[in-house]
Image 1 (cartoon, rainbow, N blue to C red):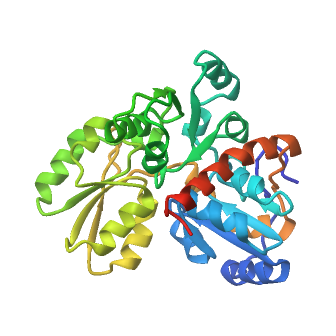
Image 2 (cartoon, rainbow, N blue to C red):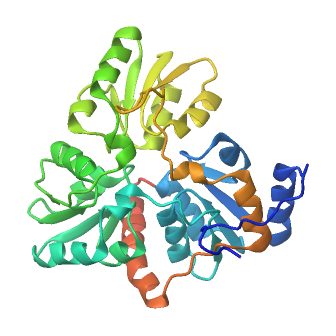
Length: 328
């Protein structure tokens, strides 16, 4: 039924209340919907949990639901399956890939590791199950600096796949991690020239930037942090205006949490559009979500042995995060 499209393209009854039907199916099948901050507004509205990669991984590891529907990109669905292998994990559209994950081929990454013996391998969560299986510790932008700082100062480290995040961590920790040369196309596309113009237009605005952005752009930021970190900063700040330099899906939660504040999305370099969206994240729609729950497809399937190897690196992240007081 999925064919080559990557999603269920079954006809939907005309005039159907999709939100009502999705909620009914969710209840009927004991399913939960995990939505990333970068999803469309309507997907976030119907999600049971909204969060960044770390928060959604925690939910996936603990849920009592029989079915997990991961509304994000594919590596998030894989992470949910790795942490809950006994659960059925669904994604609305398998075409929802990740440019950063795609920039790190597991075969080439393994060669990189073998060429640098004696290094602990730390990988960003935005990676495939195969790369996670080659990794000692997975990190997210919420916990990467703290986890790196918890390791002995003389411990050589390989960091992949994001060169921008790795460089940022090096600058904060004084480390000299060997960096894989990967990047997120969304965060790479932000224009420093257009950001400078926005700062002139909104001189009182605080600039909030994700560490996946280039170093030159981070130099203009008032706050650098994970998606959740930027949201928390906006909530707690006395400022009333913010220029947001990350995927514009986060504006939904920012506006919801701070209706009295103004959030201005930073534009990409190669477009007249006023915001920067991840095309992969936007592939998930209510129609695809409805059919996904109705037919319980597409399903994430991972080889059992691969699942066990990949889980070790995620468990190491969660254990270290607990020891460091980052999560409960």
